[in-house]
Image 1 (tube, rainbow, N blue to C red):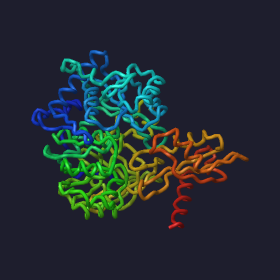
Image 2 (image 1 turned 90 degrees about the vertical axis):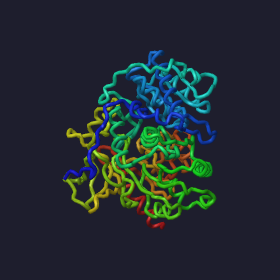
Image 3 (image 1 turned 180 degrees about the vertical axis):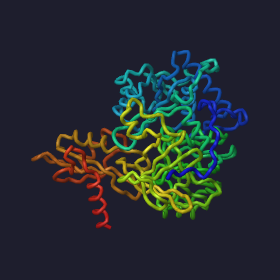
Amino acid sequence: MIHRSPYPDVEIPEVSLPELVFENAHQWADKPALIDGPSGRTLTFLQLQGAVGRMAASLAARGFGKGDVFSIYSPNLPEYAIVFFGVIASGGVVTTTNPLYTADELAHQLKDSGARYLITIPHFLDKARQAADEAGIEEVFVFGEAEGATPFATLLQGDGSPPDVTFDVHEDLAVLPYSSGTTGLPKGVMLTHYNLVANIAQTLAVEEIESDETLIGILPFYHIYGMVVIMSMALSRGATIVTMPRFDLEQFLELMQSHRVTMCYIVPPIVLALAKHPIIDNYDLSSLTQIVSGAAPLPEAVGQGCMDRLGCVVKQGYGLTETSPVTHFTPRGEKVKITAVGFPVPNTEIRLVDVSTGDNQPVGEQGEIWIRGPQVMKGYHRRPGATQAMIDEDGWLHTGDIGYIDEEGYYYVIDRVKELIKYKGLQVAPAELEAVVQAHPAVADAAVIPSPDDEAGEVPKAFVVLKQGVHASAEDIMAFVAERVAPHKKVRRVEFIDAIPKVPSGKILRRELVKREREALAKEG
């Protein structure tokens, strides 16, 4: 059975992403669009739109245009939005990069995406320059000024007239974020203008953001959740975004209080802090009307505890980078079931498929979630095989997530077929970490799995086989990995075993290790 959204289809504008976001910006010309939380630096909608136009013009003057790729390697700043929309308005493609990436990780994405330019902050410039040199980047820009990079201000010296670009919104890419998908190393997710415009239209139909609202921009803009739901969707409706470059609980609470934040799009670890941390009582968060948790499952006790404490609605949404991202949401005014991710957004079809038989599952029965709709990606960049494995010939995207639908039509996501580890909502690919662990001189073999964790949701755990006659401690292994990966990818638990379980072809039987881990944790307690 094909399940459809309970809401009427919406009309999807045939426009570019910047056209949609700034269509009504003149209505809010002098209203703050983005406020830098730590400094209070503010960009009005008029200033933001003008800077986007000047940047697009400047890039065109440099010969940067249709299909060229520009990488942003930066934490959240108001200027992030200028670069993001300026590149796209020029006809270019933005590849957003985790600011915690090592130089090697950054270089891999730069090379794979074919990026021409890179922008970063002074603090990250050494890693950025190292990666840029390896990847053959033509020019490195920096927010502010720093030796060895071109100041961002030079990109705002255009005449303010964006180039006249003709977009094929169904084919032309706007962004190229990276995701591990269901398995393997990170891959570029090709999202067109139409994908993103469609998802904003779909989501706004059930999440009616108003221009008098203020959001906290703590979710990283490099991540599809922060990029589309906060930076793009909220700005398109005239809402104000208060940005934070990194999460600090006290600063987060102070900004929520001082700016009278009304809406929070966050992840479960922050919801947990709001529910349980004693410092919360020191702040006035009465302006907050709604919290939406995404990127990882939210335990019912945590969500209910947060709702009871703050007196606001707490609900979940669901989506993937490959779906631009939103596929499920609970609209305002609807009954909230904390453990549910809501209903399919308009223009979206869902199947729940038995992973063994391929049969459609009835209400109440678990199956893999398949999705079809205008928000489904064009495919993986330079990975036709991976694309075919993810999207079948009928256009169904196989999420790798297991869920079910209840009698009232609410959807629940309960487990994953796929092997990704979700550490505080961030994706970690086991295969990538296995390669790093196996590079340790004392390691003969290794496998990495998700290990349940109360705070992070899941943490990477390595099962390690040591070379005969060679010694290494768990601390040695973890330190070795930590030096070579971004912080969220660190191996945080290590267990030594005699052999890694594998099928005859050599593929690791991670399910056996996951089962072993869960049984061990159950015995502990």
